[in-house]
Amino acid sequence: MSVRVRFGPSPTGELHVGGLRTALFDWLFARHHGGVFILRIEDTDQKRTVPGAEDRIMQGLRWLGLDWDEGPDIGGPHAPYRQSERLPSYQAAATQLLASGHAYRCACSSERLDRIRKAKQQAKRPPGYDGHCRTLSDTEITEAIAEQGGRSVVRFKMPHEGATVVPDALRGDVVFENRLLDDHVLLKADGFPTYHLASVVDDHAMQISHVFRGDEWLPSAPRHLLLYHALGYQPPIFVHQPIILGPDKGKLSKRHGATSVLEYADRGYLPEALINFLVLLGWSKDDHTTKMSLDEIVAAFDIDRMGVTPTTFDHQRLDAMNADFLRDLTPQQFFDRARPFLDRLLPADIARPLALDPLLPLAPLIQERVKLLPEVADYVDFFLTPGPLDYANAELMGKGFRDNPAGALAAVDGAREALLAVDPWTTEGIEAALRGLAERLQLKPGVVFTPLRVAVTGKRIAPPLFETLTVLGPDRVSERLNLAAQRLARPDD
RNA sequence: GGCCCUAUCGUCUAGAGGCCUAGGACGCCAGCCUUUCAAGCUGGUAGCACGGGUUCGAAUCCCGUUGGGGCUACCA
Image (cartoon, rainbow, N blue to C red):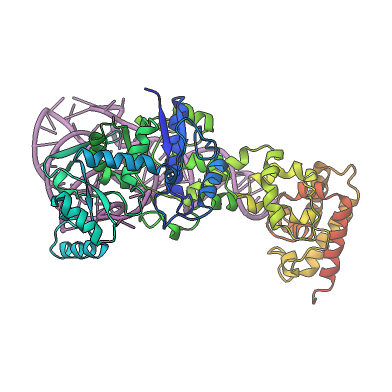
């Protein structure tokens, strides 16, 4: 059987991690089996459809590199791939079900529906439609519809007896009592289908072989299965994945911070890290692998190693993974990725385009210090800024020279002098000179180096000192050291 | 309330009756290294929800309890 899977987001908002994980598994499964990955927009709810959402969903998928073989933008053998453009096929299916006696028209008003729902809830009976119109004769229902101003829906005629067995690829057969299922709506009054009808009709039309979806769909799976039977279709293989929980163990929602995929891009996560993290939420390669390239994942991915237990989204783990992937980048790749963030974050007085090439030697040192791309700004701004650095004198003294400007000044002056003799200007030469200085002053290196670090970077936390000085160059170093010396000589300012 | 899913360290997981005095990773703690911060290395902390079965033997199979989650729309 050829593998054909679809991701069917509904354009009602952002693509969040839950949906993304489903898309990822779809994509991986298709790629692993050399199958086809289809993007289908499920916009059957006119009221909730958000303009622009479809574009943003596609942007998110593209950012992750999840490319589709058939979709609304590129077409395909089963176009269109937007459900709002496939209305005739759902209407045809509804007509077929009406004719075969598997469905019936219903003219109940929403007021009546609300009323019976509330009554049933109070009576501790399962809510759901009571089947009022199911028993009406043709003339009666025609009359009722006329009374409602011509509005009607089409409902599925659930069997009152028996059970429906849903085969799930992850948990085996799941049994549902038919009598507990109500006559759900297939075709709404506005002529649009519900998810139930639309997905079944489309999955059949598009020859979908496997349906991956969140397990919140499991309770309605029997409805779908029964629909397949009623329409005479061969059902696909269902794979209901466990859902992703938020840190509070509830269903992941907007409340849990960045849930939109694009927001992860904005925050400086690498797509490869997000993918690696997400795929491990509900799937494992073996008993020890935690880091994989996309190719490795595609090669190893399959249903047999998917889990069934709900998983919690752990930001710390994502961050650690992102840091890990960041370190694997080459210096050039690293800056290429960081550049958009630096453009945005660095002060305007730094000329654009940013001259990052001279900093390339520092990249590995920065890479092992950041978890997210925006943090790079803090490690490079002092290399690029044209003006004097902004810092407090207390910073300059650090812990080693606390309330001791004279001590700090001695260190700075000593460094100025020691550095004068460094030629050529190399990391090794600088290190030798400054270590020599610390020895002469009979102070621990850390004590001596702190004022120097603050003088040249403006901060306590920075890349390693010697490399920083190397890249900064003798002129700027001496300029900054002089400024620091001046400030220390006037402790009151 | 009803129905469905589910239950291994705090988190993600390995485990498909003996290989388990339960393995890996993130986190956390300690030590080493050390010019700040990191990274790295070493070690440590911590778990089979509970109760019954089945079996020579159960984290693994069955039943129940409890916990967690989901669904219960003319939303998806």
